[in-house]
Length: 519
Image 1 (spheres, rainbow, N blue to C red):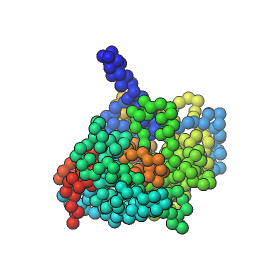
Image 2 (image 1 turned 135 degrees about the vertical axis):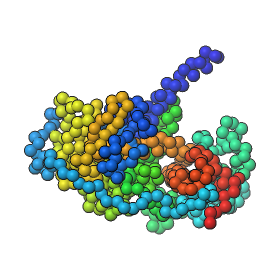
Image 3 (image 1 turned 90 degrees about the vertical axis):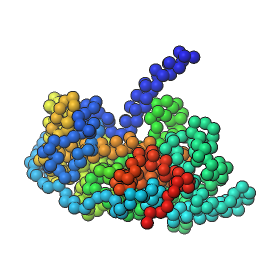
Image 4 (image 1 turned 90 degrees about the horizontal axis):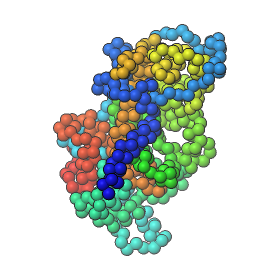
């Protein structure tokens, strides 16, 4: 027995290492521009010199990125540089100022030091939204019983019960239990303090009939009609509560992926977990982590816009980017993108709308139409670390930078003349164009945000797509509430971690703590 226990303990680090490797591969590589290991300063992957920091108001001194090397075109595919001039690309570089941005980002409402977790949550999910859930749930229960027979154990849900119901669901994001029913069990995840507010039988009845929209209207034509009003209301509340900084990121957040589960599950369990029928994309503020906009793309959507096509065609990722940026026109935002979204045509389209971009390029994942092939090819002899080539076309710059691998970037947001630096503990300073430094800073902040906050998504795994979308969106609302809390005076009055904030919110939703509305 002891021998078996020792073997399990010896296997645990290996499993966690495998889990971590798989988990990080879901982001861009943890190997920052070709080198792993801890770095200098408080920022483990990135820092800037004083000169590079002063040259860009948009770069942050506590953010960074972990890009993985994009596939390269064979050297034989290179074309003469004369062809670059014919397509408008030039080796001549000229300095240009960064996009002008005078708005002050941050919360739009000053919350008092006494504000509770519930006060921040209700900025996004107010009582009128909860009352609508009560009405729709009761309506669905009546219609269901008219069709399938009376349910004697059912009584109409109240506002207090709906808050408690959501509180129980949110509690799974803190306890990380697979089933919310574990609260009433006698096992490890049981919680007598929470279980006493509502019986398990009552909770299961509310779960059975829970609806945001009970019935399809004549105008509803897509599969998200049961949750779309909630998403629209959530989007409006995000816009009203927060003004983003100039730098933002378009990406697909890490959801529904537990690193230990991925490392230890069977192939059958993994295939079952991959049956999610939608893709969730966000536009996120890179200085705070606040998610500004959500876009849900359904797999079962008709036509070529289904999720399977979306993963194989960069132009459809462009459609996702257009949807996420539909409210960003004319504000001089700088949007950072991954290889699947980066394309010359999209960036030129956004520039006409007053949206500037900086994206990582991959000849395999990106739409490289209009780009000089000589810049997409790797030379036979690798250059020295930190060396780069740049071609420009109008305000657009195409950068090929080398650091134990070729990395290519497309940007119209940063001057091709301005220089930055990546500081590594093992190799010291690695020079790079300013656009590369900015990309490393802002994208990596989002990776760290995902590492931390994806652990606090609601663990309940329903089978219906609209319910999955609802719980993911509610998890984002709670995370956004915590971001606003950290930016408020309430955080300085009482400092809660993300887990403690979630616990407070659960207790306030269940009525176990005083959560009187803030005046």
